[in-house]
Length: 89
Image (cartoon, rainbow, N blue to C red; front, side):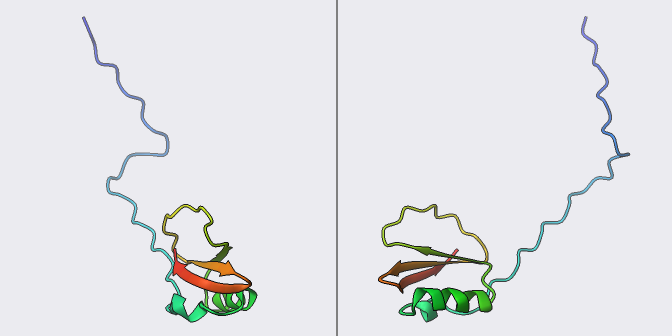
């Protein structure tokens, strides 16, 4: 004959129900990625950080990267020391 075993209670008191609220992601700067195209890479990176981008990554053309979207990240494709392409995420 089977008998149900009582489940242990989690420490920390009684469950109050509900869910935690979702965190609000930080806002991205409202400048346009096209503003950086043609600029010298180091100057473009400085400007992007001054405008509030938390992450700026410079990539060579054809670099294999993951494409997940990251709030606050600006991507530069750099060739010959200049930004050739720029996109968010």
